[in-house]
View 1 (cartoon, rainbow, N blue to C red):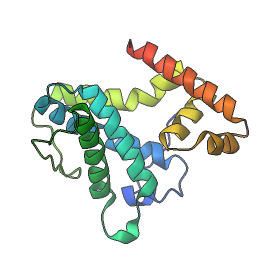
View 2 (tube, helix red, strand yellow):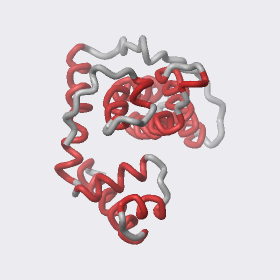
View 3 (cartoon, rainbow, N blue to C red):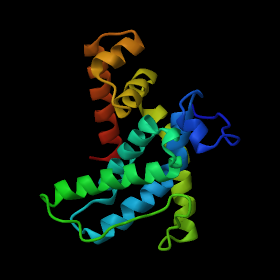
Length: 188
């Protein structure tokens, strides 16, 4: 369960990866901006589903967490913004069969405000984001959560198996169960 206090840490400190639970905290901090970006882009591309773009954006965020290098001079927020944007744009490009993107969205995570969202929407989004880990822990076993998290961090089955002290087949089985449970939970 997610309950650690990271309020004293900057995003850059958390992105360094030296603090237990830092990745989950960064996902929690950036989940709402990713959702806002996905919604904004989905409104301009009627063939795109906001939830699918949100998922793609989260994958971009996880890439940002994994590859952030403070020595390159950019803030984590700037780097995350680029990674999330690129992931969503790539998904849209694939969806539109290689067509040109007609709009460019350059959001700054530090200043992002969803002008179209009501106060009620903002509160609902925050409650949804904060409850994500709790909901996942209710539908997935601890092993499935571990494997899912490693999968989202782009671990190979072999690397995940080594980290968890099990075999690749067990990793694959746990991941397939997790995906199936999440799909059932989402009604897909």
